[in-house]
Image (cartoon, rainbow, N blue to C red; front, side, top):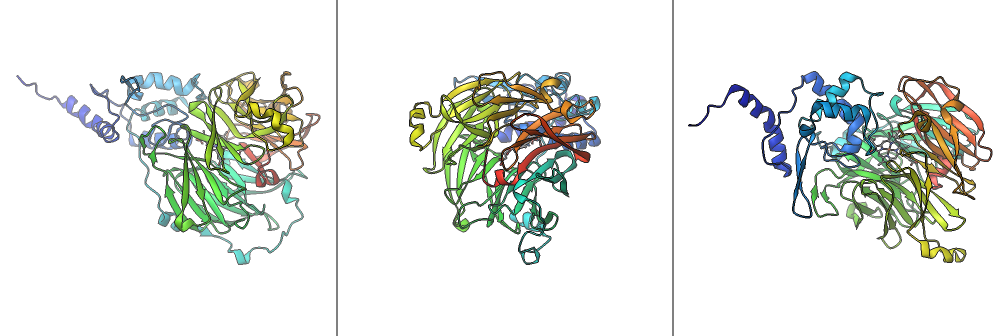
Length: 569
Ligand code: DHE
């Protein structure tokens, strides 16, 4: 006899139907019984949605299919190459286990959130990610046009620099949680201006002329700042989506300051704008096939860099592992070369010759080297766990010649990769090209950025994602002449003279002054805590200045005008 369906079974069916449909649509649904997702009030759902966007989407993706972080879909199954099936999902893990992971982090590289989120927020997130992901709306060229604000037209801007500030040595400094950019005079160390930008502003890049600073917020807002005014002035803004991380300009001869390209995480696409007004010109989707030949609905645009040798941008598409060389000489008839590399492309920088772009395929534990002269992949290099170079660091190794360095989020070391050089003196190093020639030991995992300068004799490495306070609050300095010596540990938090706070004060992102004599380190404290930028003398490693004040809140990335304009690192 057929059993009657009970009310509770019906309720359960209704609650799980959206998951089943989503699973069927994207083809990942596992067979078998479905655990019930935890219920949430509308208020909790809204809070979960906001926190997910602010804290989680960057690593796990809007659709939660996973990238640098693991998949957070309620339920997934995938076919392995040996024909077997693997199944998993947040429903399987359940609320208590998820709460623990969110609070304490994982050995796989996820940081702990117990000092950032409250217990209640952690509980909300553990339940939120067992429910079907919210899918944000698309963002078209028309949406971009509607958001575009030309605040000061080109003909109303100065025709020459009005201030006496040494523009070459200005530092565009991210004040992350304030949604602001501080422009700091590198000569006087005075804050020249603080301007409102997008939410949790991410990176800044310079126009080819060095006059304009472009900055992008995580909310997709691009801000164009003109440094020729008496005080830096925002002259235009535009939105290019609801989630973004990267911008760069056209730097090839004849195209200086002509175009800007911006990469979005959501929707997955890149946009081309006019360089001096931000007028939106074109939007190109990056949805498509991964290097494994699988369709991906959310291939986000990670790092973008402008070639100096061709009118091209290198656009790194995270989830597909495809590197696009986008030729901007004719944007109506856009030509793109698609280079296969490895999945989960993230950040990267040029080698010393500026012919090869080195980009981390972070969750594949690889670095891809793109030859921008031939338009081909030059090498795919295995590294330690989760390489995270920032833009990396170039120097001449005493034994192995020209190398490019990357640190790692997941491994306790800095890898040095040999890069080709056309100099006759470097011929003997050819045998090492594209090999990891040395690993420098770090006191733990959690490095984000390494940096040096052609005039420096040091390599600086931070460790902000390390769970130990004494590591996260310090930076490590290696002597280029003897890299195997133990690095000098510098306690940046202590040097700042600021009081100890509950939140870690993560020492992050070393950046050199234009002349290569100083290194600036941000102290990234809690979002309500006054923080600082500590400036060191690169020769003596002594503190030169602590830049602080009530508005210096959560400083992170710093972009020296000259070094960013000419890609010096
Ligand atoms: Fe970044 C660069 C993405 C978290 C500070 N970050 C980049 C780039 C990408 C990226 C794609 C390369 C841009 C380029 O070159 O065009 N970052 C992401 C994320 O997806 C991630 C992991 C999570 C998120 O939700 O955003 C993330 N990043 C952070 C931070 O939490 C950091 C440490 C602090 C902050 O300000 O948000 C941070 N990312 C930076 C900095 C750069 C960067 C300072 C530029 C480095 C450089 O020297 O060029």
